[in-house]
Image (tube, rainbow, N blue to C red):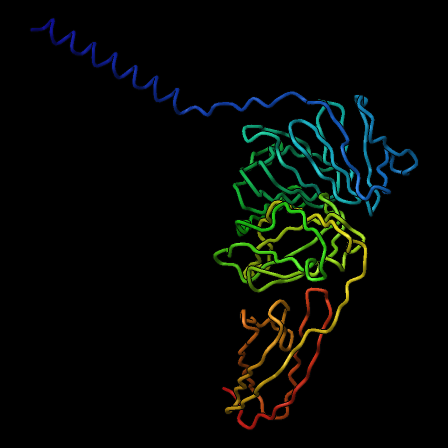
Length: 385
């Protein structure tokens, strides 16, 4: 009996020791092996007439076709020029006026100053870079944006999470977050609305045969919690310049692309807006529209959009407005966006706190940016509460 008890006790101890060892092993965080520095290549400069330089005096232009880069170098973009480069498993876009450095002490990419976008070439890729003149280490998310200045570093995580590492701490930054680090000490984290899904058209070639062919409808799915959307059109995929920027209350917009007649290729994105934190959300990946045909390069024939105010009804301190407008245009009443239905009709109410004569301004903007402005006056006899 005693032998059985001793054997049982030994077996319990062995099982406990094994369980403890298993818990210790599974509780460990596996280290992430970052790849060694990969070859640098400058792949695109926009606009084509723009230049990127090897020195701060901007006297030595960088060669786009160069394949073998030195061990240590810097690149500086002028205020109108963006550039794209591939390095360490990621495709980067440096916005106009940005600068980078590659070199000692660890052959690491330094995003020195300016703004940068990137996307990792593989979903499983892990890329670490430096940022700022007093560099901090960044483990990049799958897709993101970075703004580096003398006083702060701001990281946007568009897809996947990242982290910042200083001498004293490592700060994880999850997906859909804007993380700001001020003067290396103070930090702030803001949640971002996700990107609108199913943006269209993503990639399309539009043959221009009739004048109306150049009016293109852009659509996307609504984002929960969004108060509206910011829509932009760019002349290149590097987005070095904004050709059009517009706040959209809904999830669709018709645009007359012939107003950008000098460009055969146009690029666009859209992001949700949150007025609660006064911040744009994550933008959609850039879409591409290519124009082809005999009308390309010709000026579009524009006319002011049609707007009719059918009734203005005053009841106490409330004004009920009804009207008709071209459904592919944007309507603003006293600078407030108003929805037009598919039949071109709209209804809007306004409330006033004080009595007297009030002027109401109606502004209708067509896809070609032509405006119709109409003013009406009403008299309020009863004060609001």
